[in-house]
Length: 120
Image (cartoon, rainbow, N blue to C red; front, side, top):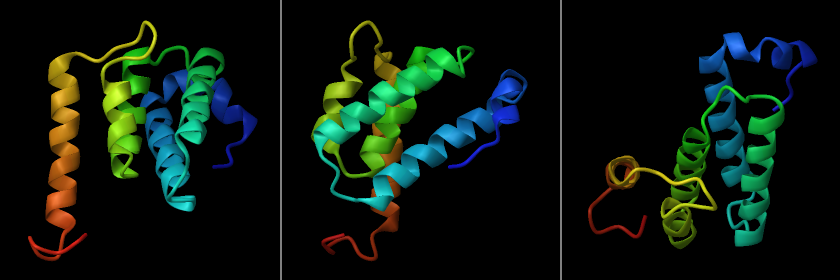
């Protein structure tokens, strides 16, 4: 997702745009190569933390974890998402936020299936 350098200089004034960018990055990461390894996802998590530290310090770590877990769930990495939903290092999600995220993902899977008994 190419962005000009000036985007990063003014990122603090466009929090909504930054959040959209992070979702887009995670979405493309999960779709470009659908069967990414757990190690590749762990590297992406480290990259997201680095982005937060260097470019987007105004975003909370909890938000970064929430979006990362959303990306994992959308990519079908359920067991890995479960591990991250429990918390990673000093960053964790409130139980209610984790529960809401999982329910949202389940709804997306449920409503995207063509029938209730299909393998999708």
